[in-house]
Length: 276
Image 1 (cartoon, one colour):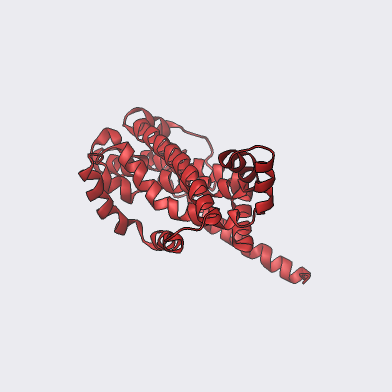
Image 2 (tube, helix red, strand yellow; image 1 turned 60 degrees about the vertical axis):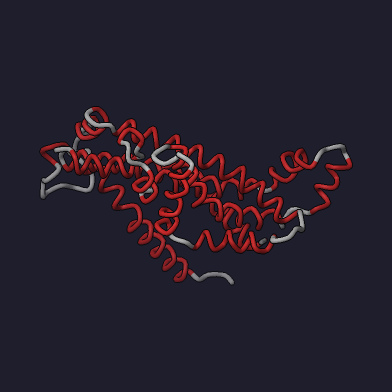
């Protein structure tokens, strides 16, 4: 159905409002941290600072453990993303290509796990990590993030695996490829949008996670950036502008990264929803 000019105009206004409401807080935090000591509380402040003052950004980066927290978050997010993608592809392949007992039960449990809020998972995960000696470690935090993101990844991969004709895999076998080679060389290139969606989702969730980072990590040097910034706010006498700079260094990279890969993420979600 073709849209009228009025409908297109209304849609454009709605999209602009959504973008404004979503991105303006991050924009305001970022430019507020650029106003410096004199301009931060200026009632006549404009939507753009007259001169960029990087004092607050230098303070948060040089006078606190912010770089260590940031590095911890990047490491945890990257490792959790890699592990989640590998296990999601492997499990999605097994659940769609093999018929075995409890197949449906496993898929259902994945859906239930995805529906549970992080706080419900954090307490039993903490007990399990304590039992195996991985509490208060980045390895334990990675496992917790994988447990949180894996259900989404498996369901996404199941949707995409079902769209790949079995004939393609059989043709690879006839050419001499093993099952694992057929998976890597034939199936994975076809389901790349789904893999990209899982990777983006996992990285963002892991990098911005607060609940698991707060409950599973107690040593200050191992804290991730959301918990670390909260610790800085509570234990130091930094100015409000310094904390705004710290928040901007979390939000801006996520927005920029999402701007570059959004089309792949949306394509993956839509393909999984329509074809699955």
